[in-house]
Length: 219
Image 1 (cartoon, rainbow, N blue to C red):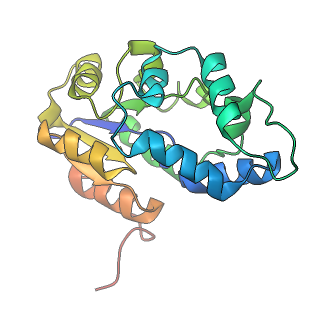
Image 2: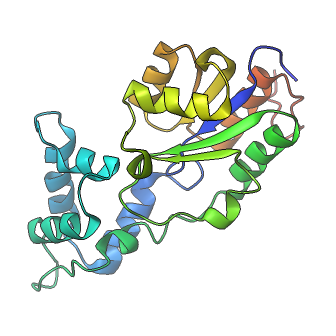
């Protein structure tokens, strides 16, 4: 086992699932929601102009999920001319986030090799495949359950504390660059997830584990 990197902290959506955009667009098509208008609405939550951002409040668990669903449904526009069903909107939004088995296997292998593992995810009050977590993670940190969210530094430090490790001892995996940047600013080794093969190769490199033939790249 590598002497300096003893833990792995992974995001969920976009790392242990297909890219976020794939799952979201599948939901938009199924619920017959105007795709362009949806992204126009959501851009207002992510362009940094809102002081009291409801998405941030939702992720910290400060805003009731049902209230957020009602407010978001009222902002969206259907392609069938009728209203958007608010009840269960978040559940439907995340229902197509299928597991990426190879990433679960990679984290499970790291854990079996003696590395501590943690999940660190920003939640929208959505469900998680928790039946898979016991075999994969030593600890699970969900933003809405701890009152913190990425990229707030305190949630990274909280996760490290739960593992009993210093940030410098941890590898952090996320598909969003600003989340990785914060982790690196705290001393973690960051992996910006783009695909399974490159992330597994990076993990093998940082943890000192041997690469499989599939992970080796031709020279």
